[in-house]
Length: 208
Image 1 (cartoon, one colour):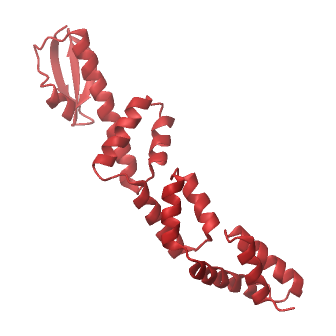
Image 2 (cartoon, rainbow, N blue to C red; image 1 turned 90 degrees about the vertical axis):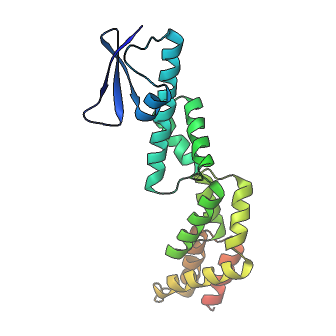
Image 3 (cartoon, helix red, strand yellow; image 1 turned 135 degrees about the vertical axis):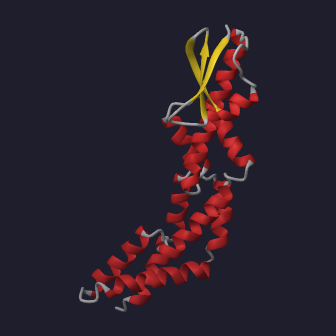
């Protein structure tokens, strides 16, 4: 098979349409075009064409992953799930993840650290909730434990729970004593504080 024409696409100037034996055959990105030094009159074997199309798919998946990552930091699981939803083959997904990691654009530990920092600045939660949120992002347990140890100590979590409990208390001051204590306790549980700390804060804020 012979490449008989190469055209730069009008809608995407970084892509080229490749014509083989006078018929449109496939398109490639500029980097693949340059990598294989494609030119008119070039003879291609079936194996060479297959390699070019493989490289184009690999390049395409990397670009899609890079664009998805460019909107905001992502975890490896988020990017993997996104690419799988587009039904890309697993080998291309893994190559894209490796590409991002090698270019310092994908680091689950740094992502988890940033996620914790931002969450605690906007609306703090307890350690249990933070752990659940990070697990949903696909962060491994070892990394989660390490990051949580940076953001939560017994003293800091107690202070956070007290502040959250006080915020809740101000909204329910007219309720009966036991009801107030129950509401604060349940609220703190929902915010990710363990039962022992939640009960302690509820009792501290609502005197019998």
